[in-house]
Image (cartoon, rainbow, N blue to C red):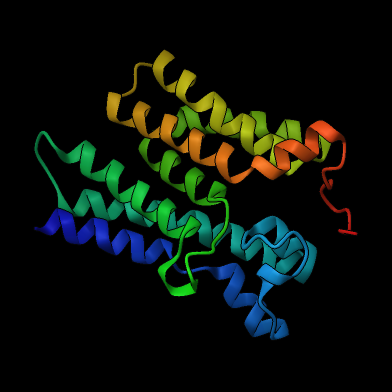
Length: 200
């Protein structure tokens, strides 16, 4: 029962959309109706500026960390890994489909990083550094995000991490590609917005 409560609490925590809240607090707007329409750190940067964007990035990442720690608190024994994984997954689902905001959320990358860094720090660090390099070179945040999630399953498998963590990384990769499907089309067409570029 405690494990179930932790999973539900993780979803509710993940459903807190800081990008949406900051849009309301700072400019009185629904950020999902501005810029790219996404409730995430990159669109916060575009619409609200650097300070709010950094806060959104950190807070969204912290949601993932806190969710896994809820799993640590709730479960011990042979099933503890699965509970931690499910709590992390619930937080990401909450971020992407938040119950408080009409199930219209962000793309879950910052929360994914928080979850995966807590579950498996070194593979996530390697994937994160790779993504940062890609973003620095190309200025495409979406491309860096996709590469990060695509690399993680291979790194986790190659570094012999527990199977539940490998499985969640595969599922999160699928989530990322689904949530970025319009970005993928724009990347192929050469129409994707670069970091720091104002949306037309």
